[in-house]
Amino acid sequence: MGYQLGHRLAALEPYAPISGTYAIRLDANESFATPPAYLQEKILRAVGKLSLNRYPDALASEVSTTYANFYGMSPDFVTAGNGSDELISLLTSCFLEPDDTVVTLSQDFSMYAFYGSLYGLNVAVCPKEDDGTIDVDALIAFCKAQNAKALLFSNPCNPTSLGLVRDEVRKLLDALSCLVILDEAYMDFWDQSMLGELQNYDNCVILKTCSKAIGLAGIRLGFAVANPTITKALRAAKSPYNTDAIAQAIGTAVLTEPSYLNGQFVLLRQQTAALYDLNAPLLTQYPTILTAMAKPCTNFVYLRTPRAAEIHKALLARSIAVRMFAGALRITAGSAAENAAVSAALREILADFSR
Ligand SMILES: *Cc1c(COP(=O)(O)O)cnc(C)c1O
Image (cartoon, rainbow, N blue to C red):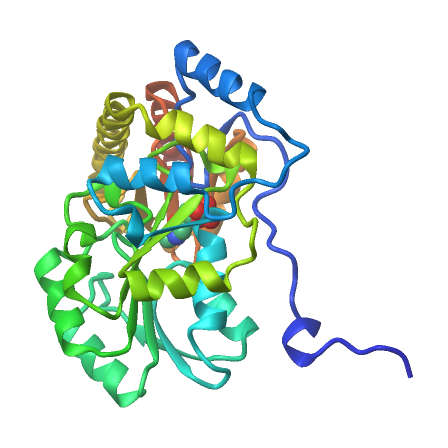
């Protein structure tokens, strides 16, 4: 009787980021900065010129070329997506067959396993070391033992904020012949990108996003960078108008501002270092509550704590949202005032615990 959802959909819940209104939002790794007035005006002018009755450029050529220019690469390697999330979805759905194995790591970005299961892949999860680092030899052995058709991980990693240096990534790419998808969403905050070496590999895709360092999470614009063979397949498999005219126009307006962008990267790195420095004394003071915080390679810090749930709740009560994981909190770097506020709140909460 009646229509029944398939087993992969029946238990699925819509993605629900934190709900409610909070004075300080440090939970989604967005940039805290808004564009300066001249850039806001440039954005509005660009949007004002659009013919919204017409479909957008299907290949998003202008924004893709602008993106390629900014990173010094060929536009022939670039495919635009509706956020890199769409590109993760496309890669896992079209480049693998149901029952193929995709290897992900734990801990890593939750969307990889989400899309893998949604598309009926066998998701094999390779554990990281206890300190969150990746043992590349173990990962290579794991991929081979699993007969992986793809390996997908973030570098630097969300949520651990740790990075894998280029030499280690090269070792991985040299050893594996399956598709290797490097999600470099946070690489604008670190200096170990593989973008410049893609032409050496026929099996590597790098994912990039405008949602973090570029400061445009609201427009949904991401890019897949890969050799022309993979790029052609991606462009052919995507839905025709996957990036809308507004995202293309705003993306172009912002990506043609290299000195603004490089300034943003520096600013966000500084704010992340400042957040780390504000919290570091708390780890010394409360070593059994805050057990570790690695030097960040991203725009957030990852604070290990057995009392994550209690601290998370106490921060929300002070109208500060951070992201909670099992045994850890991820805190996005904010403005100087936001960093000071979250750190002061942590200090109060930890003092309360110790009373
Ligand atoms: C934020 C994030 C993305 C970006 O997703 P968009 O869809 O481009 O906003 C991709 N990968 C990782 C690891 C992220 O943290």
